[in-house]
Length: 55
Image (cartoon, rainbow, N blue to C red; front, top):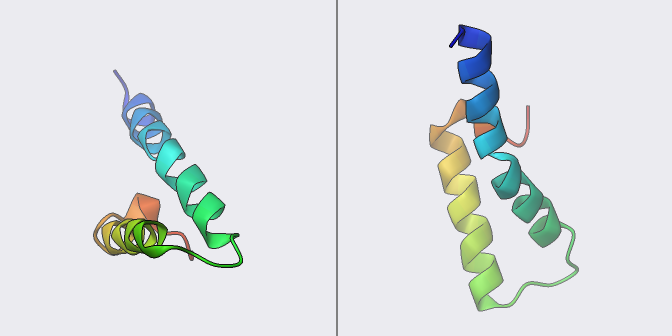
C-alpha cells in the first residue's frame, strides 16, 4: 500500500465523525447528550490534525 492509500484510508475513517459534527453543529439547540458528543468530537480534533474542523 502506498502512502497515498494509507492517507486516504485514514481520512475516510473520519468521514462519519465529520458528518456527525456538522449534524450537531447545525442544530439550533443541543440537549445534554448531543452537547457532550460535540465536546468529545472537538476534543478529539485537538489531538488529531486530520480531524481538525477549523483549518
